[in-house]
Amino acid sequence: MSLPIQEKAAHPVRDLCPLFGDLSLRRGRVHEFCGPSRIMLAARIMARTEGPVVWIRPGWVAERLNAAGLAPLADPARLILVQAGRDEGLLWAAEEALRSGAAPLVVAELLAPPALTPTRRLHLAAEAGAEAARRDGAPAPLGLILLPGKGGAQGIESRWHLAPAPSRALLWSDEENFTLTRLRARLEPPASWSLRCDPSGARLEPRPLAEV
Image (cartoon, rainbow, N blue to C red):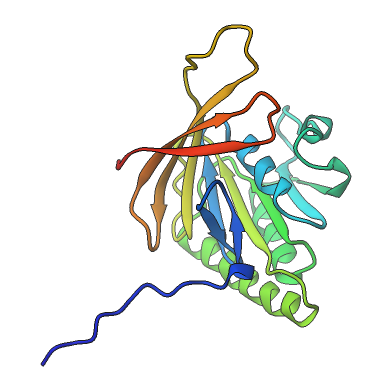
């Protein structure tokens, strides 16, 4: 007996947040950004959304998020900055923000990858927030976890690594180059792209490099 071929289900456009080119992130789920340019990548996502952004950071680290530095990409007035006093507080704040559905984007900076159970709780909170947002006619919340290095959160919807790449441009050019790598995704294979930022800094174009 032959079995029917199952095709990959397409998500409605309203359930997707654009990344670069034809790449996108599924709303109502939690994704991971890692690598040295992870904050810049999150800022680019902020520029592609509207409404308030809950940005959660560990309050015990010396570094601080420079909201004014986000101005070329997105309005820093949209930021709701939260500083947690311990690791558990970071995850709790992210969970509550996602569950409320009040913010289309929730960003949590973590110092170490969370285990499977906390990640599942974040997904459940994002799904609950999606239901709340849908009743109000708003987009489902998008959750982002920022991790150093190659990341490694268990049970994440997708994992993206962004790092600066050597530029062939002249020294006086404002052009910036990055390498974007999809390390993990539920329905897509690992892949890598070269991203080139034009002199205005307002546009990035993906160019496939190779499967990794």
